[in-house]
Length: 231
Image (cartoon, rainbow, N blue to C red; front, top):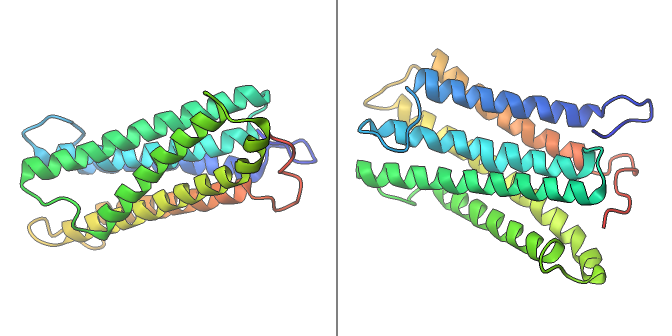
């Protein structure tokens, strides 16, 4: 963890970790307690859908956010931090791809059209850009690896583009929570607008949004000391 001048854990990073854990707990509580559980195969088709929000929060947002934080905050050698960064992003990407698969499977088996909403359009863009970002990073910084000069020149772009993809994933989640809650509040479910489940979905969405803000604030060079030699 990054240390402040007083030797204490960086508050921005700590807050991001707490929000990440909270987001996972809240989305699991929603999908398991209120929505009945998770399943990639089931005659109860909504259980297939439930895999989608869990994995999209866990993958590109929580694991993706932790990957971003790990490169700045872990008390490890540079090469070790790079490997953790790569592995966390790989896990986040895998979870995201499986989450997209789950919602397509749910739509196909339920007779619902695919890719008709703004959430789905932005979501496909986000997961595609995430995959391209990971692939480009792997090729440039791991294997086969670009020259030191090229890595130095492209690193700022890699960092900025990665952060933009993360922010896009957070924004996509906000659209998704809003869309799903709106559907549930209409027929046939007619979920109470001020009921426990509706409030939980909104709290989960706000937590994910705050997590996005916390990750950005944890890595930006606010005090002018965070961006040292990192290549």
